[in-house]
Amino acid sequence: MGTRRYWGRRLVPLLVLLLVTPVALAGVQYDGGVDRDSSAATVSPTNLTVVTTQGGEPRGDNVGDGVLAGIRTDNKSTVFVHDRYQWYYDVDPVDNRTLLFTALDTDGEQGSSHYAVEWNWVTNETERKFKVPTDTHDLDRLGPHRYAVADKADHRAFVYNYTADEGAKSAIDAIEWEYDFREHYPDPPEAGHSGDYTHLNDIDVVHNGSAFLLSPRNFNRVMAVNRTTKTTEWTLGGQDRPHVIRGQHDPVLLDTDPLTVLVGDSLNHRAVEYRRTNGRWRQVWSYSAGLNWPRDVDRLPSGNTLITDTANDRVVEVAPNGSIVWQYNTTDPHPYDVERVHLGDEPRGPTIAEIESENGTNVTTDNGTATGDGPFKWAYRTAGWVLPIWVGPGEFVALALALAVGVGWLAVEGTVWLRGVVRARRG
Image 1 (cartoon, rainbow, N blue to C red):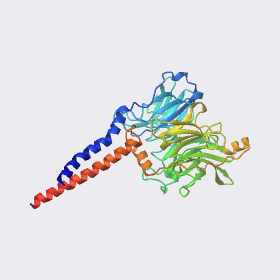
Image 2 (cartoon, helix red, strand yellow):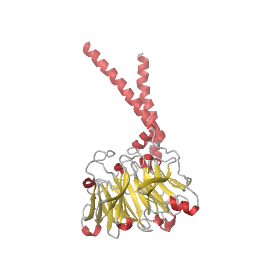
Image 3 (tube, one colour):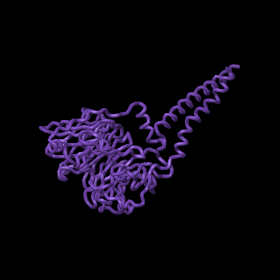
Image 4 (cartoon, one colour):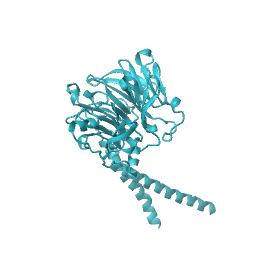
């Protein structure tokens, strides 16, 4: 009995060491995963797709593992990588040379802050940078100096004038218009979370500039708010209708007559298009095959749909019939947004009704199976926010086993030690 215990105490630590060895080797071999092309300026904007990723690993060198990557659409080679900041969210092409994005900067003089950045990818120059509220996912450029901001932290949407207070350079100042959800929805919705009851993740100008399209994720709804009266003009979804949309991101108003909305129905793991006629919304198209937590969804002029499939670390372009015509697997985890530069911010391509009318055939709604999250995938995706980027599924399993074995071993050793203490006291 004593011999078995002796060898058990020595073999268990060896087993733990063997289990963590693949993780250590993956870290040593990891080279960052991206290449930089010094000839970025020669790439045509018509052949450029940009993708943002949030990453997940907080690094001690103040350089995050989220990136803004530009890739050639035709061969998917890396054109540029902007990795100065940590988490990257929405990206909008201002023109064929300048990109507007929001990101977390962990190397500021005042500590970690979120910023809006206008960056020229051709010259690699920052043209404008100013603070935005904590964890701002989206802002849209309304003109040379004005921006619509989705203030997730303070549960509001507002318009900021950059030139009104150039000394502060902060979107907290110089606010020209504001919509505070707490004034219109004083009671947190059932779907909300403590301290994050809206999780406002998107804002777009709609109805010829008279309204904003807002996406309060935790409200399970998309809504158009009139800029003059601040009344809600229309709503898609609701707390009691999670089957319509649930935890959605980045809706796009494709048409106003009839109202047609395309949205990333994130927690239902699908891209879905709704059309409203006679005051009622009807699902007219969806794509779900293989998706897991899709967030950005854009309808391209071709009629194809470009989707950020976040939990699968990829972006895909699918035809109306659901066939995949283009796919890019991101090196960095948790992609957030994808845009084709020459098409500008969130292209509003044809609706399914227009595609059907042009082709003279009906487009069958995709009934494929979404990937979703099983227990393992949920644990791996959740752990991905804090684990190093090189920890893949295999390394994650090895770490989990090492942890389980280590905890079990410590529990046994602790029990033996306590028994020895008790015996000594009794003796």
